[in-house]
Amino acid sequence: MTDSIAETANMDGKKKAEKNFRTQWLAQFLVAAELTRRGYTVTFTLGNCPVFDMMVRAPGTNESFLVDVKGSSNNKVGFFMRRKEQCPGLYYIFVYASNDRKLNEDRFYLLTHEEVNARLDDDEKKYPNSKVPGLGYQQLDPYKDHWDTLPKSGL
Image (cartoon, rainbow, N blue to C red):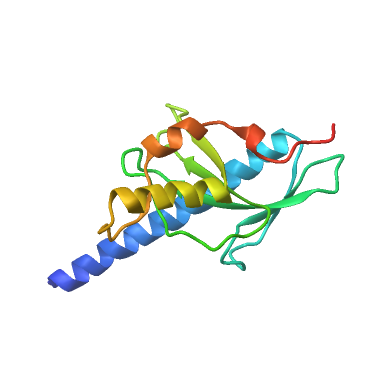
């Protein structure tokens, strides 16, 4: 039995898509676990909303907000994404989800929607011909573990 180059490339593409799918779900559950640990109530959209992944409420308040989670298991590249139109109450949490559980290196970067769009605008000015817009870890480092970016708990 012989495989053509196209079939091999298609299998590699399927494996990559499956890994990306698993990484995204891992990132969402890591974020939900951390938010719950901090007293927030989390509801998943289960992929039914293209703008955000979860709705969150801080306990002791009636304030709800939206979270879009971006996950990656590659600690060198960053996150590919395009600028989105302003959405009130939207926050981004970028997650580096380590594949090596022994290292326990999961990292969280928290930004408002305005901050994400500003960073993407800066990147576009710096690299106007880039075909792969996004945010690298160097751009995100100042936002590492900035959980105070989110609306506060009333507790």
